[in-house]
Each structure stands twice: as C-alpha cells, then as structure tokens.
Image (tube, rainbow, N blue to C red; front, top):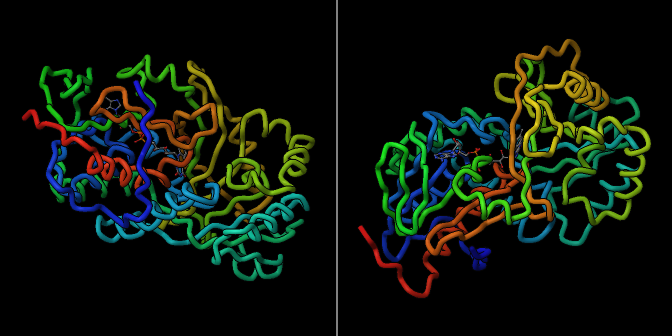
Length: 401
Ligand SMILES: Cc1cc2nc3c(=O)[nH]c(=O)nc-3n(C[C@H](O)[C@H](O)[C@H](O)COP(=O)(O)OP(=O)(O)OC[C@H]3O[C@@H](n4cnc5c(N)ncnc54)[C@H](O)[C@@H]3O)c2cc1C
C-alpha cells in the first residue's frame, strides 16, 4: 500500500475533458462516491457506481448539510472547500435541490471568543467577505440571535446549506441522467487489481476504481485501514419541527470556535479553550459543540456530540441532547422548539489531524476516507484531484475490457 499524493490541480476550474475515456468503478453512493462519479463522467469516462443500499443511508444523509469553508485552515484546504461551495451552488438548480447561500454567523458571548473572531478575520489572507458585527448590527440583521451577553459576531458569506437527503437523492438522479450507471442493492465483497466482485457473483472490470465506502471501509481494506491512524466518531443529531421565522444564516457560537482547525492560529484560542474547560466540562466530555442549520421548510438540523471508539453502545443519550439544546438557547431565541426526530451518524477521522486520507492499496485503486466532519464540503475538490490525477499518469493504463 502506498500513500497517494495528488498533483497540484488547483488551476483546474471544473471537470477537464479526459484525453481518453476510461472505465471507472466507484464503490459507495454517499457524497464522496457521487462526487467522484459525476466528476469522472463529466470528464468523459464510463462510470459505474455500486451501492449496497437502494438509497443513500450513510453519513452523507445524516449530517447538517452545511458546506463549511470557514472551518478549514487558510490555504489549499480552504480553496478546496470554496471549490466545493461553488459546485454545490451550481449543482443545486441543475440537479433540482435547494442550496441556500445563506452564509454563517459565528456569535461571540465570551470576551475570549470575540478576541478569536477579531484575530481570525484580520489574519493575512482572510477573505474580504468576512464582516465583524457589533451586537446592535448583529441583532438588526439576525433578530433570532440571543442578545443576552452578546459581544459581537462574524458573518461569512460563503457557507451554504443543503438538506442532505434531498440533495443526495437529486444528485443521484442527476448523475444517472448524465450517464453514470448505478448498480444498487448489491454489496461489493472484494476489490481485485482490475475488477470488483459483487455478492451476487458478478465482476465489474475497471481501469480505475474509487472506494468510498464510508465507515465500512474496514470490510474491504481492513489491513490498510488499521495502518492508517483512523478511528470512528459517532455523533448525535436532531431535527426540529418547522419554526416561524428565519435564522438568516447557519448559526454557531463560542464552542464551535474551539472545534475547527481554522481557528488554531488565533493567539486567543488557548484562553477561550481554557475558559470552556473551566466552565463547560460536561460539554467537553461529550465533545459537544452546537450548529443550527435551517432548511427551506423552516425546520432546523441541530447537533452535535463526538464519541470516539470502535464498538460504542447503541444509545442515543438524552443527556447529550439536553446539553445541545441548552447551549443552543444561549445563542438563539427559538421559543417553543419541538424536536421531530433524533439520529446518530458516524464518520471516520484521522487521529493525526488530516482532514482527508487518500490511500492507494493497489495500482489502480484509490481509497478515499476519513473526511471527518467536512466531507460534504471537501468532496468535490477531492474528486476533481482524483480525476485529474488519472490524466497525469505517465504510462496509460492498458484497458482490460
Ligand atoms: C452527524 C454528522 C454531521 C456532519 N456534518 C457535516 C457538515 O455539516 N458538513 C460537512 O461538510 N460534512 C459533515 N459531515 C461529514 C460528512 O457527512 C462525511 O464526511 C461524508 O458524508 C462521508 O461521505 P462518504 O461518501 O465517504 O460516506 P457515506 O455517506 O457513509 O457513504 C458510503 C456509502 O458506501 C456504501 N457502502 C459501504 N460499503 C459498501 C460495499 N461493500 N459495497 C457497496 N456499497 C458500500 C454505504 O452503503 C454508503 O452509502 C458530517 C458527518 C456526520 C456523521
């Protein structure tokens, strides 16, 4: 197995036409598989996607639906996230799902959080679209923000909100219309050097294979996965009944600033983390930070918590949901909120801080994993790199079909 190193394809703006059509097999119909399938098809390849369920049911339909470049460190990863944001926004009307360009509002209630936001938005390379708002400006634009103790907020225009089940369903249909072939309801049981083997005995041969099996990657590549410093993370989520009024942006507050790598360069971050450790031990123990994302029907997706380990209990902990709701009330005004559903989601995450792990267990096989909590944001940029990398191979791969 080798670690796959992508060429720099940052100058490529979309799917470049391939110099020759190749046979591509994708394992997994979540967002990583779909992004690779559509990008490869747009480049002119013959693409077959194999998904064991009859509809997407993995992490890609269990998340907030927030496209979140603000969580990514400035530089190539933020560029990858911004590319993803542009793809989601252009694909919404094409595929027929809502991609709300609402932006995000990071609200500061502790002095240390306001310091972090001020430092973050004045860093060299900070995008021009960031706007620091006083409490008065915040409340005038976002009346559902909680005024009690508010120090100010940072509005960022890039973040985008989709409803995951709607978006994945529409994207699947769009990819099929564009000529991606789907084999659903059947499991891949083995990935060979030049073909995948299905549980019903069929073989699908490929020039290149992308394995995007989400949390079940270990079934197909247990040794490679075990060697890659990756662990599962389980999160608790909730959706509310529709609420009257609009949040106006995806809303987060102090806890979230301590969560994403983007804020790690801010000199005041250690002081904020210490303040949180001193006053919110239970939130920290469960890895709780709170995002509120509103969809077109007025409902909110709320979460989340982070439990790490291989064999966690099946419980949905009411105590954790209470922590989320209690924290939500510190930065929003949402009287009479009613929870309509609760669920868990799991993703794989690198233990060494990588936001994505790409492995090449065989010459023609690419494993894409450990996108952590940013896979919806990063998937399109990663797919672009994967597809471009096939073009840059020195020796054309002999087609076996
Ligand atoms: C609760 C939660 C909240 C999140 N919030 C966000 C967010 O707001 N923004 C963001 O950018 N990211 C978010 N993420 C991360 C994002 O959802 C994931 O990184 C991303 O969905 C991973 O996509 P995937 O395609 O790899 O996995 P999945 O969506 O899990 O898809 C894998 C697919 O492979 C299929 N499969 C597995 N094994 C086989 C096999 N052997 N044969 C055939 N098919 C197989 C499965 O059935 C599944 O459909 C969140 C994740 C979670 C869990």
